[in-house]
Amino acid sequence: VCGRTIDGSETKVVPGTDELIFSGRNVMMGYLKREQQTKDMIDEAGWLHSGDCGKIDEDGFMSISGRIKELLITAGGENIPPVIVEDTIKEELPLLSNVMVIDDRRKLLSALFTLRVTEDNEGQPTDTLDEKALHVMKEIGSSATTVAEARADEKVKAYLDA
Image (tube, rainbow, N blue to C red; front, side, top):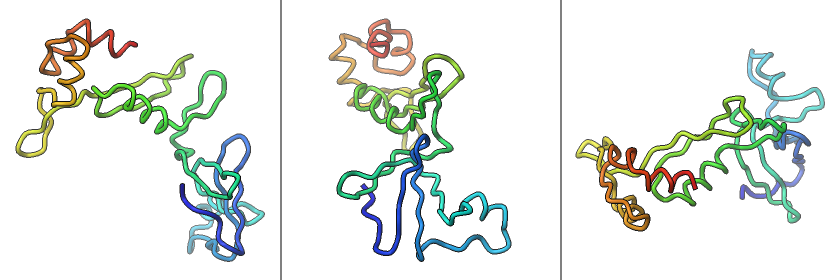
């Protein structure tokens, strides 16, 4: 939650894109000597287009769900902020450390991910699974302790496909 619109200003959500736009004396006049950038940011009616997707609740509080440039468009034409999907996947699958959802122009979205691993003395990832990942391995009945072993393990594949 970001807060509410300040007095003397207005905030709207653009239908279709869910972009938050702002108007008021607090909105900048534009970019100095950058007319095209100003036109890209502020429309003819004076509304500043934030580039952020969000919503305004019944109490007037704004929340941001992602950036328009990051939106994925499904085969059905629905705009989806990938951060929400990525965070949900990581919550559901604690074996994963990073998730990146991509739109490869297919019916379904795809995801690239990395497994949770330990770091070496210089902060670089190792091939060794971390404690949280090892706990998941134990829960699913896998004996894998490295990324290489996990990639070849059918139990891990079934866990990730679920």
